Image (cartoon, rainbow, N blue to C red; front, side, top):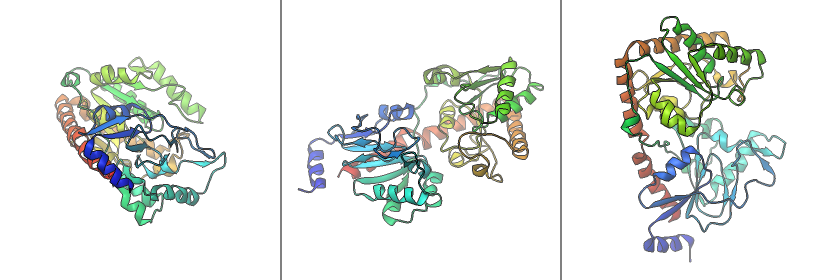
Length: 382
């Protein structure tokens, strides 16, 4: 009997679809806690966590799930998997799917594209779920994929974020508290410190929280650059410095934040922006990659225009070794202008924050995602 016929008969008796998620992290836990109707999520144990020959900086890359008794369809997050079951692949960009080499040897892009293309062409690979329109474009722009079978499987499904309790959404007229988090240099932390120090002279009561780890988040081969900013941060009594747990971030830090800053140079999606907007917090970010799909500038947050700068070539990889002065000044000037407006007007913070909250609850709510994913899962198993 054909596999699709077997699956159809099973779902006539038990309409519940069991979806296995390949990797566990904060975003995956939230998805699992808010399943579509008729769907149950689980985190199956891989039968092999590492390919014999392929190596990747992505820890979950090409894991194998040979035991398919726990799930009906597998959702592979950020990288392809090896399985005989129906599966869909959720990607923040196509580069993630190509992040591998042969043992310790790098492989040409055309070779990597060819290998991944064969995985995605297989009948049991049902969909490629890109997190944004910008991400879907990397299938063609970066990957150069022209295979109609693979292209037909590609669609956009925005990530979803939980609805935050009204008790955590707060607006005050007190001195403004600013927040920055993540990879310090790559996400624009240097610009945040530059602008904060400048604005302190005009607004001495403002404070800044930098949720970063000195050893992990200050990735730069330029030792002088790293030490300069660490010294400035430590000396400033209005800056609170140090990474916090996710639980503390969600329960304490974000509810106390008035403006979230992420003038990033490189961003695959911008999930931290969604998390801030879910608390009704105005955001100042750059118009890089998928971020303009999250933020409508001047409406539900603010975007610094960096479209005249080739940040992909300016800042290759994860380590930022130098920040060109024209770029630094351009970002600083726009960041300062937006921040000055937000600091001076509590009414603007409320208006923009409320619009950000509405955007997240509609475009990036679980209702919208679950409606789409329910159809995708059902089509995958039948």
